Each structure stands twice: as structure tokens, then as C-alpha cells.
Image (cartoon, rainbow, N blue to C red):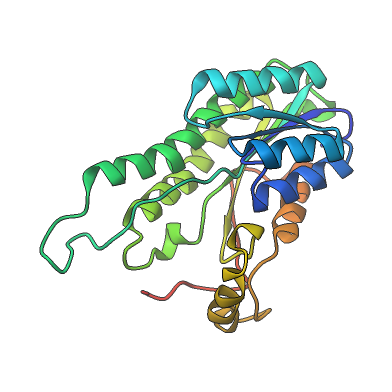
Length: 254
């Protein structure tokens, strides 16, 4: 699919994986909208690259629609990438004190990490479906972000693993649903990635996780995620798939 000349929306575009993706798609000629809640970082990207920043809560229909409208004003919307994050609850299903895991925390984690992805995907799909098809009938692509926790959630990760498992499970169904419109859906399931958000704590995480990755023995880099997203966008035959990006890492129980 041709990337240059079309518009793209990157939800969570001011975060580590999202920012790298914004830069990669911008380099490829896409007119990018950064949809995020991180005003300072989003506006800095806007000044530096000439992209647009729209303050966006992924769980809000009005916010997402506003970001999509901004993208459509810049060119035909062809690409939606969702890499947003947020607070996630955790803990064992039954704690050491015998108390069950908090229900409200579970609901909030699902709201952010699963419902938010669904919200962005459904609204972006409607917008991409309005565009004129390219050669071969393609209108665009939606890239979502799961996690290898969808497959090997660790002890204490039940809400997060459930949400990411839901994102993975939506992929094939959404691809089938959207095939008549010429819209592809692909999900990336990253392993452990070192992002700027960790700051100095990143050194400790690298020391912990790096040796556990079979090859290469290090955490992933945001640019590697962005490179995969770029390839997914460009390769019309990638559809309905969840792609692990993890250096062959499999999460241990804890």
C-alpha cells in the first residue's frame, strides 16, 4: 500500500512505541496525527516534525472522532495505529490475605487496554472505509498493539493479560469483517521494549530482561516496533495476523 500522500492517526503517538511510529510514518510521507493525552510531548512532536497533535482519550468517541477528522483534513485516511497505554491494575486473583482481586481495577484495565482499542478501531475503520480505494481495492490498514502477555501472562497480570488477549482475538474477526471494504487488520504483540518512559529505571529493566531474551540478548527498541508497523502498512498481503516481536522471549510465571 502506498503510504506517502495519505494521512495516518497514531493513538498513543507521544509514547515510546507510538513516537517511533509517528517518526517512521512521517519519514515515509504520511501526514500524521498524534492522538494522545501527553500534551507536552505531543506538542513538541508537532513543532519538530510538522505533524498534528490532538488531545485524545482512546475510550472517548468524541475525542477519537476529532482526531480522525483532523487526519482526514490532511489527506485520505489510510493508516490507524493504536499504541496507547495507561494505568493497569494487577495482583493475584486471590491475594495472600485471602481477598479476591479488585473488580473495579479489572474493569478499568479492560476499558483502557481493550475497549479503547475497539473504540479506535471501529471509528478508524468507518473513516478509512469512506476513502477511495487504491489499486487492487485496498483502502487502508489498522494496526493494533497487544503483548506477549496475551499468551504467557505472568502472575499478577490477569487484567492486563485478559485485555491484551482480547486485542489479539479481535484481529482475525476484524480483518474478516472489514475485508469487503479493503481494510486490513494486523496486531503486533511486543515482548519487553525499552522506552524513554522508564528513564533511569530502564537500566535495571535491561539488566533483568536482556539476559532472558534468547536472541538478541536485550530488550526491544521502539524503532524496531516502528519498522514492523511500516512494513505491515506497505505489505498488502499481511492481514488478520498477530505478529510476536519479542526475540523469542516467552514470559516465565514471574
